Amino acid sequence: MNKSLITNLVAALLLVAGVLLNNTLLSLVGLFALSGGLTNWLAIHMLFEKVPGLVGSGVIPAQFEAFKNAIKTLMMEQFFTQANIDRFVSGQDSQVHLHLQPVIEKVDLSPSFDKLVDVIMNSSFGSMLSMFGGASALTPLKEPFVLNMKQSLIELTQQESFIELLKNQIDQPNVMAEIRAKSKKLLMPG
Image (cartoon, rainbow, N blue to C red; front, top):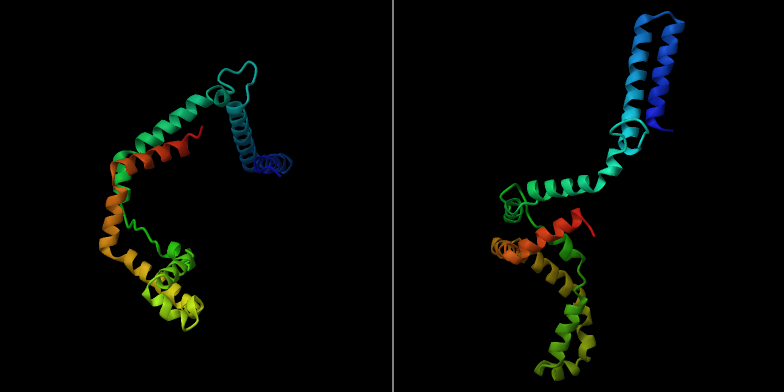
C-alpha cells in the first residue's frame, strides 16, 4: 500500500475522530495533517504531470534535459574536478589506500606455475628432471608455489615504494584525463 495514502488515511481518521468526539485539538491535528498531505501529493503530482489550467505543472518532463545537464555540470564542476581527483588519487583527502590483497587472493596463479614448469623443462634442468618423472614430478609443488607467490605479491603491494610507484603511475595526465572522462560518461551515458 502507498505510504502517502496510509498517512492521509490516518490524518482523515484523526479528523473524523476529533469531529465525532468533539475534540478540537484532535480535529485540528487531523485537519492540518490531511491538508499538508494532500498539498504535498498535489505538488509532487504537478511536478511530473501537466495539469490543465495550472501554470508550472509538468515542469520536470518539460525541462528534463535541462535538469539532467545542470546536474551533470554540477557534478563535474564541483565533485570531479581535476584537483579533487588529484587529491583522491594521492591520498591527501583521507585514509585513501589501495588494498590489493583481496584482488591478489582471487587471482588464479596456476598459469604462472605452468609457465615456470615450462621454463624449467626447457632449461638444462629439464633433462635431469626427466629422470625423476618430468614435469609431473613438480605437480606437488603447485599449491605451495601458488600460496607463496600470493603472499609475496601481497607483501610487495603493501610496501611504501610500490604504493608510491602505483600513485605516480595513476597520477599521469593521460590517466587522470581518462578517470575524468569515465566519470563524465558515468554521469551522462550516451
